[in-house]
Amino acid sequence: MRSKAIQGLLAILLTASVCLALFLPLNAEAAVEDEVIFVSVNEQIMPLSADTMPVVRSGIYYVPYTVFDDSSWNAGLDIAISYQPRYSRVTFFNLTKSVSFYWDSQSVVDNTTGETLTYTTFLHNGIPYVPAVFTATHFGLSIVQMATEYGDLLRIKSSAVILSDQVFLDVAQNTLRTHLNNYLRSIATPTPTP
Image 1 (cartoon, one colour):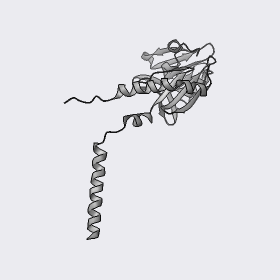
Image 2 (spheres, rainbow, N blue to C red):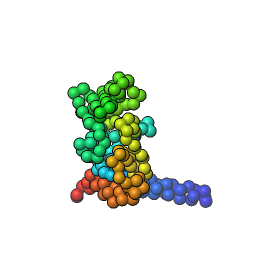
Image 3 (cartoon, rainbow, N blue to C red):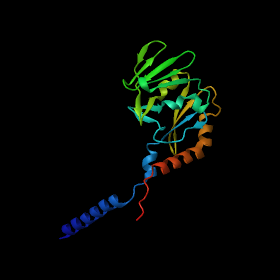
Image 4 (cartoon, rainbow, N blue to C red):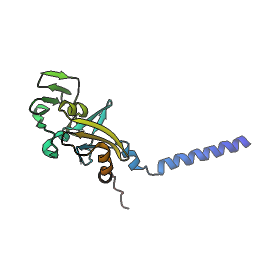
């Protein structure tokens, strides 16, 4: 008899646990923060959106090609970009180097040497994404990945960088929080009104 009472109590507890799991709202902020990746160029932090956020594939960070577009950032990256959707290609170049990223064939070609490199590129949300570390270092930039309380941060740095990584993290907290809150609002599912 006692065994039946314990089994009955366990069945009630299990049923209650399942009901709570089904009906309690998920914490959207906690779920999204695990996936949020910020990008900064020197001291400028890019706003978050589905079209601008980096992605990780096979442990490699990929960023939208526009991250390296110096005309957007005016950050002294000294990289020019030619976006050619007709050829499924985006080409990065400066005075000494040129690299083309082909998203149809998912290949990368060093135009300076003619060599096909062991990197890949692809379209994500209709935007060409390029390997962040390769692209930065190939053009003489440095890149560092830092963990923040709001998500990972990829910081691309040129010789024009002013703040050290630690000082930058300290002063960037409000901007990171604001960008995250704006992003969470933009992806929130509106609650239907009765």
